[in-house]
Every structure is written in C-alpha cells, then in structure tokens.
Amino acid sequence: MNLDERRWIYGGGLSPEWAWVVRRRRELALAQLAKIEKDYLKAAPPGVQARRYAAGLRYFLKTSGPERDRLSVHPCFDYWLDMHARHFAMPVQDADWHLQFGLFQSFPAALALLRGDKIELDATADPDGRFFVYGTPKFLSAEPRAPLKLKIAGGKIAGFDFENLVEAVPGIVADDRGWLMVHGVTMHGLISLAQPERERFAEVLRQAFSDLSTRDPGLHAEMTDMLFSLVPLKNPVEHGSVSSSYVNLRGLIALSHAEDPVLQAETLIHEFCHQKMNQLLVVDPVLLPGQSGQVFYSPWRADARRLRGLLLGAHAFLNVARYLATSLSRETYPDAQHIELMVNVALRINQVDSALKALTGYGAFTEFGRRFVMGMWKELELLRHSVLWFPPALLAEQAVAAAEHRAKYALGDTGFHKSAEHVDKVRRAAFLTPEENEDEKEAEAEKKKGKESK
Image (cartoon, rainbow, N blue to C red; front, side, top):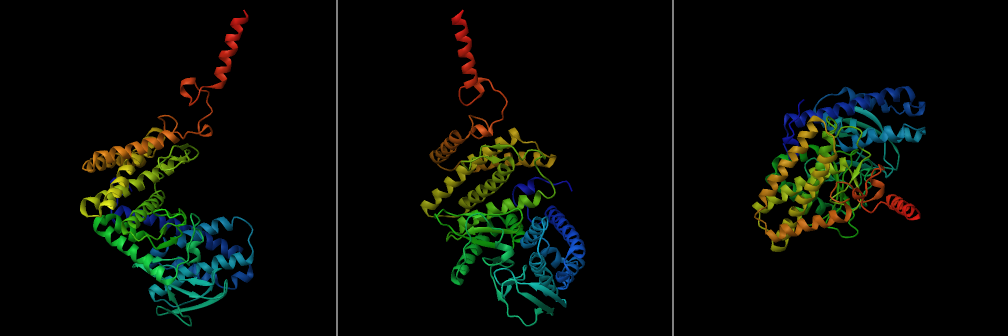
C-alpha cells in the first residue's frame, strides 16, 4: 500500500491505511507464533509436552476471527514473543518452558471466553501468583508458578473466582499487577496502588480520554483501538509527569498519576505517538538502514540522541503542541494554567524545529519517510502561524530558552552534540573545530621555531 503521510503525522482515525498497518503487524506476530509452535513440538522436554501447552498454541493459531485478531496485537502478546526470542536463544531449563508456555495460555483462554468456545487448557500462574486473562479485565490468584487446569465453556472458567482490573475506558485497563504487562516496564519505577488510588488513577485518565474524543477525534479513535493497558509509575521527584513506552509492548503506556486531565492527555498523546510510530515502522522504516550509529544534538535532553529518537520526539511533541494549542483556542483555563500551556506550546515549536533541521540535514529517508518529514515541516509552520495570538514576549522568551539549550549542548550551529566522541575523526581545519586544533598549533610552533633557527 502507498501510505499517505498526512494521516500519519496527526491522528487519521481508523482508516483503511490504519487497518492495513495493524494487519501487517498481526500477520508478522502470527507467523512468529507458528514457528514457535513447530519448534515447541520438536524440542520441548517430555515433561513439558505432557502439560498439553500445544493445545492452546494450536487453538489460537487455527481460530480466526476478530477476537483472535485483537489478541494478536495485545502488548502482552508482543512481550511474550519478545521474551521467547531472547530467552530461547540460550539453553533453558524445564521451569522456563513451563513459565513461557504456561503464561501463553492466557491468550487462548481469553479467545475461548470471548467466543464462548469449549476448551481445556493447562496453564501456569505467573511468578507473582496470578494468572491474567489478557485481553479481558479478569485475573485469578494462585501459588506462584502453580500449574493450573482451565475448563472453559459458555464464556466461563469452571472452579475459579476471578477478580477484575479497573478500566479507564472500555477495553483499556489500569494494570499494576499483570506480570507480562509490567515485567518489561523498566524506565522509572513501578508502583502498586491501593484500590482507591487505582480508581482515581483511572478516573483522571477517563476524563483525559473524554477530552481527547472532542478535541482530536482521529487521534482518540487510534488510541482506543491500539491501547490495552495503562501502567502506573512512581513520581519520586515530583516532576509534572513521568512516563514511558516500549517497542516490545506496543499497546501499553506507563505514566505517573496526576490530578490534571490536561497533563494526562498530554502524556498519553506523547507516549501514544511513540507507540503509533513503532507500529508504523513495521511496514516502512522511514529512515534508511545504516544510520543507527549516528548521534546528534537533542533539543529535549542534555545527552545525544540517534536520528530515530529525533524522529519519534519531533512527531510526539508536534502532536502534543497541536493538541494544547487546540485546547487553548477552545477552552477557558485559570490564568496560571493558561500561561503555562502557552509556554509549553511555544517551547515545543522551537524544539520540534531544531529536531526537524537535524533530521532533514543528516538523515537519509525512504520515499515515504521523505514525504513524512516534509509533511511535519508543513504542519509545524501551520502551528507556528496558529499561535501568533500568544503574547510576543512569551514567544520570544521560549525562543531564547530553546536557543540557550542549543548553545549549551549543540556543536556550534550544527546538528551534532557538543562532545568530542560524537564528532567524526576526520582531520579538520582549525575553523571547523570547536576549539583550536592542538596538533596544528604545535605544527605551527615547530615551523616558526625552524625559521628562527635559520
């Protein structure tokens, strides 16, 4: 499919292109699972094979339909595939087989429950003593790594009392306990919430989603289609918000609690844009291969960043700035918050400008990637025009703040980071180096000394 860059820069809704990209991701995941099933049947130890994990693998692979399609792009399915690829590349013990394939039974269990099918499965409780039916809010408690026999029929599992996770919106849970969900969340710190805190975490996010549905319905539609889980994080130094997302957990956003729905919407948009790009990169890399080793000045950080990071950052902050600018034009906020939001938008415009300059100056792109980056330039200029009503002094102040950051961390007026190890080793003329070239200085001194001796 020839992708239209315009519907990927901002939220394009559940278009045929969106469905095609999701389908390609799903097909790749199922192909990976089919290979795992073959390897399992050949190599699983007899004691593992006796637990009949293969029944769940076979049922999931053979059963087509919207329920299986949805579960195949669940973040825990993503993480399970990634965990298998990493762990089973090395020698493993029987306990690893039981955990890996026992936890997988969550997906055929969820599929049978959703379809009302009848099936018996052997499963394994996770190391925390729970078994989650991922794709539903349901989980049960058991002994850690305990073997479980699940008899499923008529949308029920016989003999077990299930608990339910809190949903922020239908289909998107607030999950601080699912092992496959939180095991891969490594940035910042996880937090386990008491039930009232969990309810409040979900409630503010529910309001943020509601605001998104009216202010950016296309982005909201994509977000509610792709996301399954919101994982709470600690905020130990009281930043406005801390958050993270992961390429091997597409469909999960981890973020700290905040009472401000606008801040939570901003965080959701930022991290979702990373998730959306990680899904898009399945079908088009945007940046041509061979550039991952290059690092450049980042307008958001004190350390260097790769071109891919600049691409994802520019895309995320462009969406955030647009959303906040739209909110400012439609809503009335208290004076302090009104100014804070304008400052946020003005700073992001300057930061995205800097990132796009580095991308266009140093990156090599696919045909779609070139159109995508040029499209972001166009949208940035339209956004810049839309904030001309902001106080000129505020816009100027944020331009200065961005320039000061650049002067501190960028190598002159280039896109490089100001650090010797991040500059190539090609010999440079003195006027091209950040400091006077010591070798040339010594050579000039020797030359002068030679002349004086004559």
